[in-house]
Image (tube, rainbow, N blue to C red; front, side, top):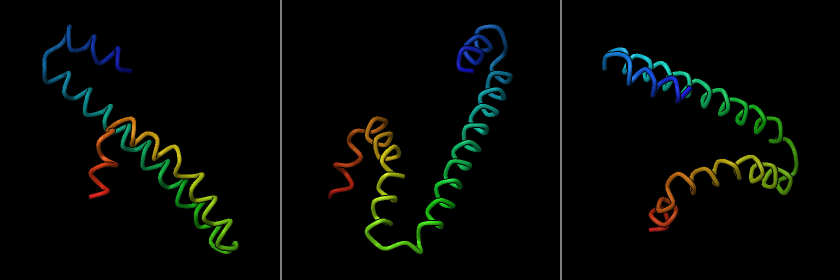
Length: 82
């Protein structure tokens, strides 16, 4: 998908590139919203369990998100500590 965006930047005008870029970003936002919905639904299912199990499941669900956050912006956890 990114290769197609790069090719369109070379071959087409900037307005066509911006329209393709906005479609790509809209698709990615939809995919992230869908993943967030899956996480919230799975968290709703564990609310009736004991608190220890709920904490472990929540931690396991958010480990990939925390790792992505640290990879994308490594200084953000340091800023959140202050």
